[in-house]
Picture 1: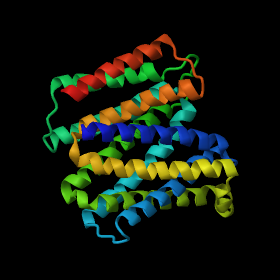
Picture 2 (picture 1 turned 135 degrees about the vertical axis):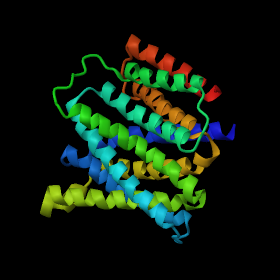
Picture 3 (picture 1 turned 90 degrees about the vertical axis):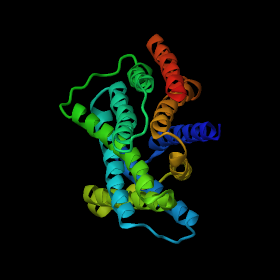
Length: 293
């Protein structure tokens, strides 16, 4: 019961992060393309500060944790970059299928093949139904079809990076122990922030600091969302060793999508089509199947 309460809390936090990110992007006063890397820098440094606080500013990471943290930072930056590119060149529903499929399937394969976690055929079927339902839930009438040859490659990178991120968090705890989880998080987000600063410097040259200028409204969303990110990732790494990783990532990713759709209907008055509603119901049934088996 405690595990399901924590998973529910994670879903709420990541949904809140998604909504606040949208609010921040809409309120960002500069070039819209700069909103994401700026957010990565600020949220990354916030996560690092929270991690150091939890460690009481005592950093003790093994060489393996450092290496995994650096690789995970590359996955995080790759995810953010490919998400932007894919969203600019193709339909959101297809993008979401690749993103959630990577986040669920890759950790499940590694956990099953490498670490010999159990994966029944009923749970595998539930995961496939969840992924199939993602398209139905995400589809919007009149969404454009892809006209760019880079759309599918960007979606593939998006799925791989999303899956690698969750997998590496799990691998670190299995190989080096949960006691280094804060170090892993700190390394991941510190390196991601540094890489984003480098990208911003290359793109903007002498005007790098100007892209960090915020309006009062965007600053509130930026700080609030950064704190939510820090809370969500630390709850995630805390619960990782307590539950089956396949169930965790399936419930988390699908739950966030469902709750985000619900919030969009309430907050942004978005209307759901019959296909969206069927997808939501199908996904709920599949999540019950994954949780039970």
